[in-house]
Length: 347
Image (cartoon, rainbow, N blue to C red; front, side):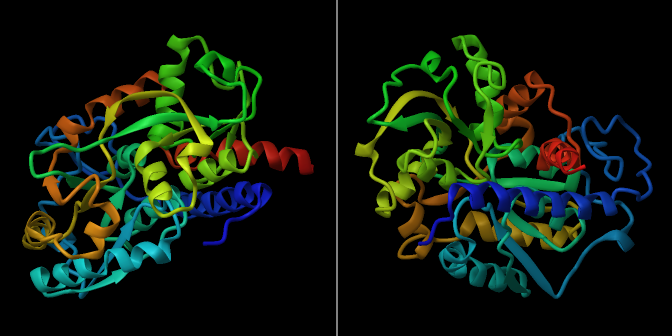
């Protein structure tokens, strides 16, 4: 697998994120939905009259989507082409369950993935932990499943890593160092560190300057190659990269780790035809992982998709984002403020 230089890794997410934001802004001027109850944090296009915190299926049947081809996407954690092969058997199974063709969409940023669903170009997806909340509120995303074990166990930890050669041994040693966060919307790569590190004596953007790497694998490779001194990352990504031989955990030091968080959620856009929603849900919850590429890739941590609800299982993530004062807008999702600063320098 080829990895970009530090400069290129920082530039590519910035450009793709900005492009996604511009597309999002171009779709934001649609009429507000007429709702019976408070829609909470949902965009004005959506209602939550049943109180489950996700967008309701439209009552007007003319607004239901029933596409001939379903577009599926997995969170842009690593090389999208690799994960297309991992999910091929599951996409074939979804075809059998729904009678629809299923096409892969390899999103290269969280913002692009959410924009694709908001604009109607993405129907079913696996969205990373923090961006799940943005997907729900901005794109009408409805999470229904998560990877887990037969006994209901699931989750990953935020791990704070450094290279073993550094003198960084505890959280406060990060002060004044080069620290890579992932993206503004990432839970373990940004939102959770901002909410949790303060209680441990370190405030991001005050005690150290935050640099965004764009993806968890970029942060991990950056620490392994000593481009960054420290990085908060998802333990699940670090485990997979170690298992593939991309990095060696023996070269790294875990300074601190959090309690368990929910992993990538799986679900669909709210305005799919109800019958199709049920078929997709059934595809996730009845898919047999044995002998599949999914089991080979994720089998050490999970062996099936298990049912979840956004209201119950994303409580801690919503609390973290609320603590950080997160605004569910296109701008905060893609970190547009960073790009605005760059534009000012050019003038």
